[in-house]
Image (tube, rainbow, N blue to C red; front, side, top):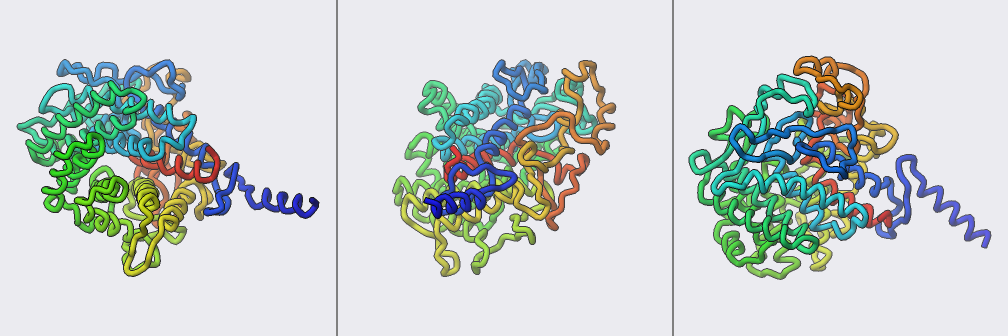
Length: 499
């Protein structure tokens, strides 16, 4: 008994970590380095800090207030609601639709593991899907942006104080926007899967709208930033074209409807739409990698033999991220962080980690592996790569810093976010004018409102993070950084017995 007690004490010491509480260690992973459950809770809470519109009684981020209550009124359309995508007060439809697709995918794949957080995750998806129902209320039209971005960026003010023009921009047959419309269709279709059991009537409404919007996207082809360039660029130009969104949208509609029409569409158009392109960056602009993995599921799990080639397409992307193989094309920092771009690099970390975990799930189900240049890569290996990225994000890095606000002892305090950096309405009821807020932007003091759960752009290529508010490339949070992380954290929290 004494020996057994000593072993228990030794195990407790090994499992202790200053940033984490480990409930149970998985025999496959060793001890968890972080409290993934706490991080999951916070990653979902972040979306409440980004809400626009009339806030509900259940609102937990209490320093935020109602905002944008007249959005759409200038054209007599109700566009109240939705989310501010990042640290400003514009509702950019293109990145927001991708955020909602990824948040919904997080719930679809890993919601069954979320336990008490599942309802909060559903609420976050519904806040977005309600808005996209409004934005697609008129046939052959998608309202894709609310707010004059140039004027908005000339101010540093709380969303509750906005006095910049809330101009509405749209795509329609004369101003096509296949990319943003197909992404919106994907978001609606993915959301329908979230509510299929809990609210079937709502799910039916979402999928019906997704079909209509996808048909519009496919029929009236064009890149949305061609005609809307003065308003959406350089913020969210569509650099990769619209082919990836058409394949992505069709993949989601196939998954949501099981209608053979979408299977035929994928088979007939896949190659033209870039199914086998070698790009390996997955984010708000380029969806090719995500589409490949989503379609590969139909082959691996649903045994849709006609889509067998997508296993190879998905493998190609996955192999590009496996260090030590001849197929590795991904750059990692010395500290181990996947590094794509200097601007908001953490979005690629979270989206890639999600795809690794999701594909590992499909491979494990079908008892398959990936061959990367002759090296057999198992689902366990993919999970380990993803976990390493999430652990880095949460604090296992050269700075010893969590890049999620409010998680751990050391995290970004000067986040590039207007509402977080200015006094709340409760603390300062008087209006703070457009230019008055710039004092806060350039101040060195910590943000007065902690935007719990927000994940910032992250460190530079040398694993350094200056924590400066005006350094938007590294210090700005965004919905598309958090959305895929929600699923990854749910998997890890469950895997380590924390849920």
